[in-house]
Picture 1 (cartoon, rainbow, N blue to C red):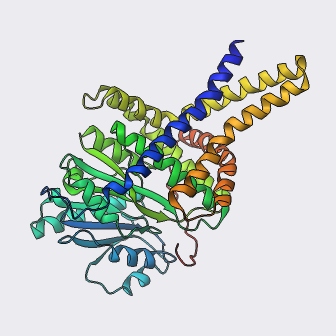
Picture 2 (cartoon, rainbow, N blue to C red; picture 1 turned 90 degrees about the vertical axis):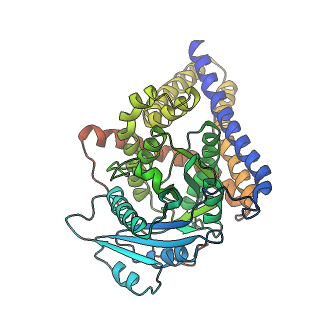
Picture 3 (cartoon, rainbow, N blue to C red; picture 1 turned 90 degrees about the horizontal axis):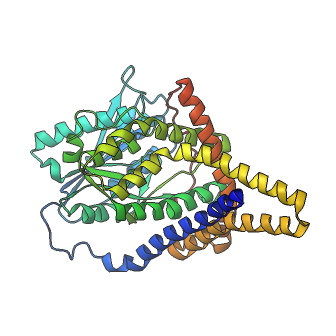
Length: 427
């Protein structure tokens, strides 16, 4: 009986959690139309005046030209200035030639060479931070009104990105903003599943975290006031395998408010090779494990409310919960099915399997439908297919979690860059 009760709780909690996320996403869609006009708002005096868009790149010849072109074309509200800083972190392909062919006075290129180069994205971003800080001081700009954004080498910002970031940073208590993430090569099924993950599920999760004050920064589409970065010393980004996660934690601990906007997006390449996807997700999961050391500090931080603390701790400990929870859930399900097969009628066993399968799959079909209703840039059938494939995608994530635990225990912390694909027309 106890095992059945445990199984019932697990069965019900998963759909309920997804229902809560769907409600956050739906509420955001309903209210989106009320906040379209940025210029109509009365200036507060805290809006950004200068945007620095940092593009860290290492051997990005396939994509960096279009990324830089997109970044240079981004415009903030009237009166703001936009600069693009590319950190070439020791590229030995055609990246330097691609960058040299771009003639624009707003483009700055910081070339790093060995032995300083190739020590991870965090070190490249720290070099960019010091460069921007020096230029800001020389220009006499207010660091509180200078914003440092990060767009990956394969990233494309939406035309309204800087305006939406300005909207959020008009609030003087806000020091950082994370934008929605999309996948632009979603014509491939595996990439379409990743778009469902980022554009819908992660988007809803961030909206929920918005209400709790626990928004996390992503590696792509993050924007932080220079004055907030200065609170963290000369190296705001760490050597952690997910430097963006640690930066977000450090900002929260420093009392910096982080917000999320779903109305602006940055697109990136999705991985279409399972092996490379496993390698990427293993790095992400290991980065989470590396940030577990912040748990005692978060627990003692007086500025973090109880509900926010619970959410942060869950996010940090998610790899462990996934690893242990899967074993527990699989054991409960396996034992229950074994008992039913031994003692009960066949129809009861089949009905139980059907209910469990529906409970696991139905939420993702709901996400597929929501993707179509909210974003309207894919066919419903394709969105539903991505949702149907999502449980298998979660299994890949579970494999990555176990690999990450093994790497962490073995002390293997090598940083592996995600390889880019040659691109067709961007979507």
